[in-house]
Image (cartoon, rainbow, N blue to C red; front, top):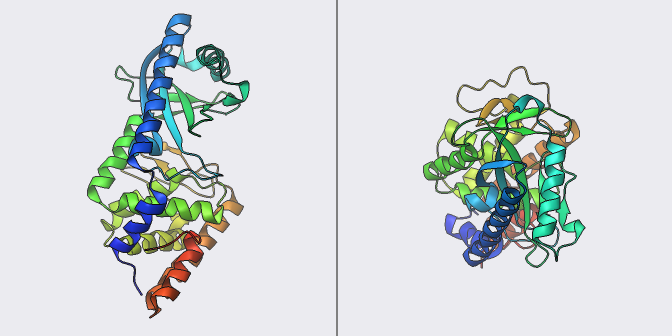
Length: 314
């Protein structure tokens, strides 16, 4: 039997989607973190901040509820003003942020601050479980829309938190089912333990399908066409606008909507790609079989193979 949008929305709202009051609480924590970071960096005077930009699932409104293994996370782009972008080093900046935040949050332990990331700096709030990734970005325009994100190895990539948020919102306006499809796919990813695959990758594939095939006719068909694309056409790559996927050597190519020279899936390994494709085809075949099953209980059992035993339409 086929699942209706009402059936699947019930599961999404009751089991997956982060409730509005919790989202507001987490956003409040992010706002206070930004205020503290702004204050301590201004006091230090070593770096000048041009703008903070909230990004990621929390800002887009697509966060799923926290689990014992997957906390709610938030991204904040910290746009700095730097005189020499060619010789900018991320490691000293991360160490300074850790030092100043430790002073701003004296009750936190050193383990609550993670400065080991290649491009980000992590902050954990033990009480709520919220994990915030601060993304230091050197601004390259007056309004801090774009910037260079540096790694410890010295390389940098042009990116834009604003473009990423706007890109999602434009596609969500074009397809009202995008958020529900994305939440379901996040659940599938975690249930299957798909290493190397990020929520951002899932979002961009869904957005690409909206561009190429139009809005999903139903949530169920939106999932089926996602799985079919990954299983059959992932190797052809995902691009937006004038981007060209040829010339990238990585196993999976998903181009950054903010920079067509940046492959955001560049770290996915061949073994991870193979499993991604395999699990997608299995999910596609399972949903197709569920559509042909005449008894609803059997249909639900098949959906639980994809989304865990938590799946329910009650």
